Length: 410
Image (cartoon, rainbow, N blue to C red; front, top):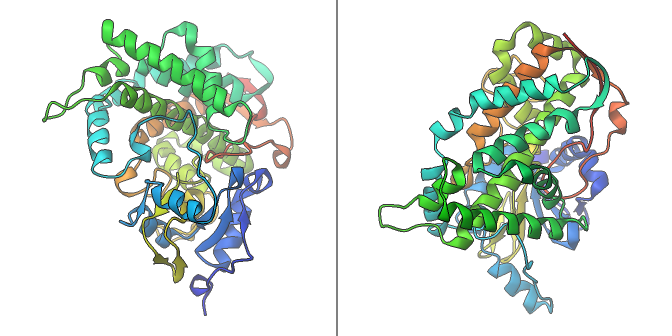
């Protein structure tokens, strides 16, 4: 029996806690050797299943009986004597937590406002922001690259794209970072603050529309003259802020960290910047910032990878793990970092109807940010042991809280 044919044992529960997240690539590698599916315990005591293999991950992400609707889970818990409490404040009514046909409607309306042209139009401004951040650094020394570059660049881009006034940018950055740390005491207050800010801005854009994404979302209609409700508008904006820009913050961090761990690859990218678009796909595969998918729930009893999954069970895909199990187009092994790899295959942006709407913007920002950083910061090395960095301890995002570096700007 091959490892991928082995059934997981019920007593081999994977506990997704801060220590697991800090060592996630190695932990997932060991799990893949045992099989593609494992029982898991997630933050806040939630129990379910985690998928670590590429083929099964693709199946799960498009499975018609694995849905966003948590009703079967609530009913299963109620039958066992538990009550599933719905959070009072979340990301609101938005497509990430909707199933077709509602998901189809919400995504269609959001796509009509968040167009490819609106994304591509942000390229010059993204490059200017990157240069401004480098200009603000002392010519040489030590600093935290997350605080000085990785975090403010995507935060400024999404804030300007949405039309958030500059006086709210600092609060906006703080709240959006805290909102995804589900086990943190700041999680709920941050969500509430962010929700309140965006609700106020939506109302303001309705009164006085401007040339920004929030105004476009307010104005958009579909062919049946449908439109986003107030709750859906705020929920969609919350999704773009929290799920969108935080993933790019940490994609930048993980990419730079990977290059610091592989100085030969760093030198190669400096010498051949034309490799950057493909290198970004490799960074997405090698250590993606969205470590796990959002939850899906079994609408009926079903079988995944030879394992019986009861109705109501929560199933989560380890997107980062799947990239290390994906067969690569060039035939080379998926392990290791190779910025020359052509067409890196991964699931960093998901798969199927929930494929990330903001993927083009994340790719654009990361490519531009790395190009500016590597062209202007000619010396870049760790200022602390890379195995001692502090990682985000909860939630679906993977990234370091800080990245101390020594550098010199030409």
